[in-house]
Length: 150
Ligand SMILES: [Zn+2]
Image 1 (cartoon, rainbow, N blue to C red):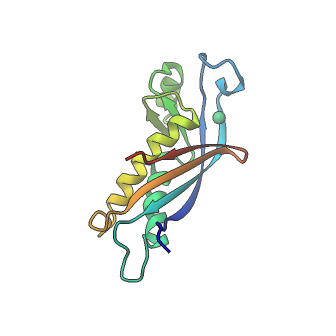
Image 2 (image 1 turned 60 degrees about the horizontal axis):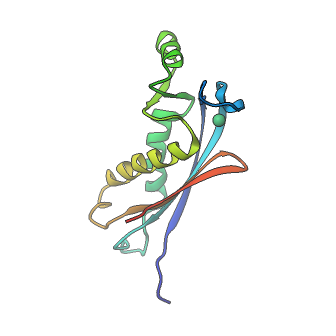
Image 3 (image 1 turned 60 degrees about the vertical axis):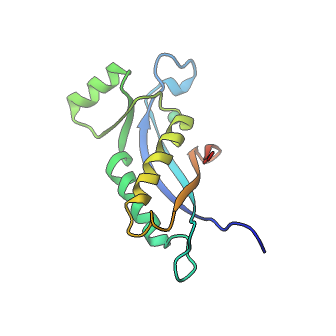
């Protein structure tokens, strides 16, 4: 039947963050989450076996970024000088970003990072492998969705 097939791969990591003084709820406090991201991919051309992308390659690309940059790190908005200063002083792992660390902002930013990681896989760009959707859970009940708009 006509239609498009996508595949999805899930990855998890632990990370701290805070929304800081501009936030008036409990999320202003430094705290951590077990984040979960589910990346959905499509390809212009499937592999000879009919795959969008081998699941092993997909998770290798995703975990390479997640483990290197975010797992057991504190994600910090560069404008949060107090927290950034503390992290620099202690040498604790940090993931610096230029936005408040809401799950909505994280989702859009991570979509770009994941696409870059998939682009680095052999043959991926030639076959037009594209991230078409990304869901990031901040808690088991709360998540944000990014979808490709073009
Ligand atoms: Zn939080």
